[in-house]
Image (cartoon, rainbow, N blue to C red):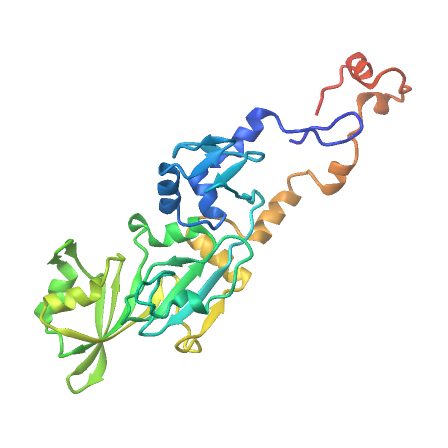
Length: 315
């Protein structure tokens, strides 16, 4: 509960109250859009982040009022919870999902709108020769929820093969195939038609390994002639989103995505909760009524002494 001076002005929070509002430094930086949580952990470990003038450690926590710098630049941490921006993009073949490329190939980031603070973070990647749904966000925590292996978020692909899968091959994909980096498998695969030697399949995987779908098919002796990601988690690529087109999700859809990830309630629910908490704007701007006011006693003497005499509890 907020505390007030005798003139009704809000007082600074107690240290223990600030501690309750603290959070891990790498998480706060990710939420500010500097990068993913793992990238921020590495940035801190490299000694490139300072907290109140001292080199930060990965285990440090940050709270309102702390001075945080990354590479000597002050970072403003937004403590007021805001809905992050989320953008979907239909990646074309021949584009890379990276900001820097020594070969100078086109980048998907060239097509994204500018961000006032922070930056766009890619939720997963797609190969140079793969097209389909890419999701970008300004919230590193949201990106972590959708890409970390422990959350097992589904990725659905439409894949065109030169040749057809037989029952034994489909069963091996479902049970697991030994690749160079361990066993990989698909969670579901169904035929989707085709003509001649070109056969389409829809499959679902829950990992984001490099070229995983292509390597699975190569292991079975089949060649992928086209690969399209059509869904990532709860977000499916709409048919209206043609190659090279982008679309920013409205706030209500972003809130639904946050709830799907188990990260937050909707803004409407938060406002309702705040309204029902009994602390309104009027209560903040108006001095609480003291026991002296209720009893009709005159307001004489120093305010501090008057509070002691009335044994009023400081709010």
